[in-house]
Length: 246
Image (cartoon, rainbow, N blue to C red; front, side, top):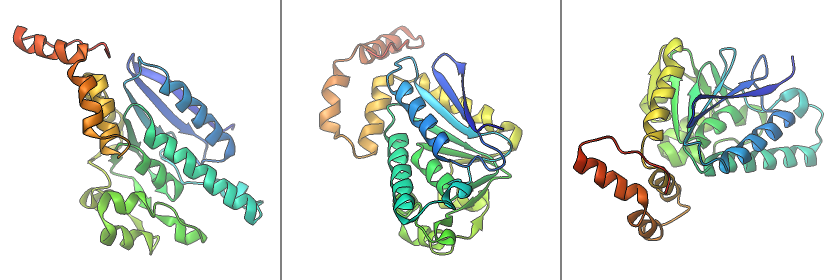
């Protein structure tokens, strides 16, 4: 079966991305190029206000395609790892929030992909591992400590051991754990909630949180925005606000 990423719109403002590369939804070179192209399209589509990223087949993502990695020399390995890291940076810097819906394996580069997303939800059958040390490399050595603190992160990063959704929730890696059949509905509900907020404010808030902008830089445009005026008018009229990203 050809590895691919399915792109759909559950609603007009939400994009669903589904990794589909059995058996492990590995991110080989073709999958990486496809994901980068999709991100480029989303970045310029102002109708998109949130993204849900998941994997098909009861698997989120098991990282690199080790069949491809087997044929790489040292220079090619370094190039592949650096290219993967740039792709993760692109996921993290995407204009709109990305929600990872994690079902099944979430190992190595798959965990890094999840960490590059803004919010993570897991199914009860998810299995995690910061498994870079298991294959003689590093993965998540920056994002995981930044998210959960160095002490907790080291327990995962230095052992490469698998851990369950309860541990992921306790450590703050995910914000919710759901039955498998409820995972996508819960992710869509969260995405729809985010999409209903003022989009310029959502995007500015994400930039500030990620350290790519300062509050003082973002506030003037928000204070003068049509969306802010609409929010105040809607409050006074006791109606729902209709934000138009203006």
